[in-house]
Length: 112
Length: 113
Image (cartoon, rainbow over all chains, first blue to last red; front, side, top):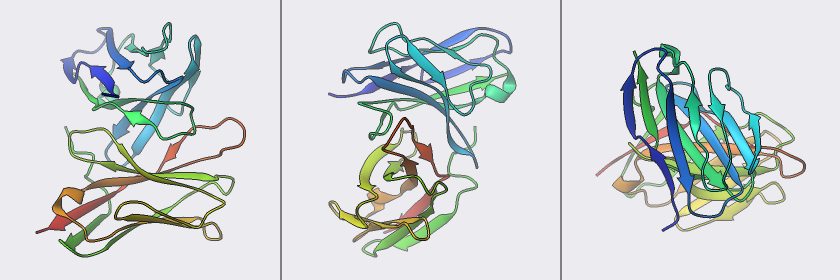
């Protein structure tokens, strides 16, 4: 089954404690992206990757890092999380940035 | 945490009615548009797309209309069912050159039996 898998699905943590949200896709897609979704603000892109070792900033990259060492994986790293990063996060993949994207089921992060 | 459905415009319809969800897009250079459906607790799911060389495209029970003159997109759902209850987003992009999707804020559709 074609899917984008995110882990964990839920996480409550404290300010400053580094965390990583993993994302993996099994569709051999070149393009992967991270979004955050906040009430009233919709989906905003954090980072994206056009291919292995190629990443770029989206609209709200501050406080986040990503890496793309393998085609299937695109982890999102919060080096020093802060409460304003409490949000619902989605990973997505597609054949290109302009094609319909397949989304994971989301990771809800709460930073206390 | 708060539901992503809060603060969204809401369309309430009866089962069996036709629904029309509207979207105003921002970039006059956008030439590719997608509609997504997001159910509670899930990620957005692709419904239908349309390119700017078309003004109408039909899928199964859904039709997308594009009016480039006024930068307006609509999604029509025929014979709406309770399972159609969800948040619906439009997204825009440009096909030429490098681009990524820009999402609208969404509309919540509530279908009553």
